[in-house]
Image (cartoon, rainbow, N blue to C red; front, side):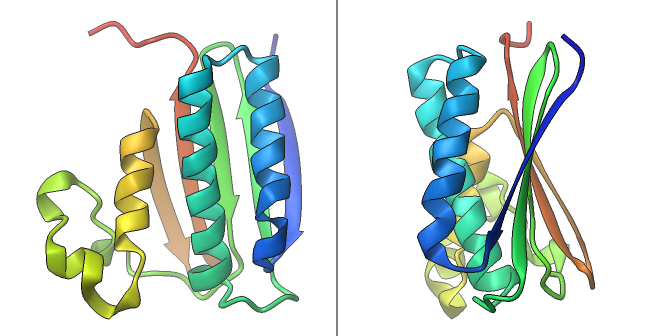
Length: 146
């Protein structure tokens, strides 16, 4: 199997987060991702979509959240793309040693959501510009050998 690509675009309305969750579930089942890992992925994708709607697009319904699933023989990638004005990547350090209580509670930001996402998937990365932010979640289909 070569590269497969599935795209789901939703308006910035939290009601439609479940559409992305259902899509993640179906794709995971097709790929025979084990149930517990699929549940983790669905939670991570839901958090990412909610972040994109609330923080990226500021719940402006005319802005879209694009979710692009790309699958190849070794991994599933989920790209969650918003049309916001971008974030300061420096402030989005999700590594454990940077997550402090102040981070989680402070400023009403969902820093905890980002920490949760980083814990649920094999790899993640964030790219951001004035045109928006892309959060890429990666799940390897076979465990990487140490």
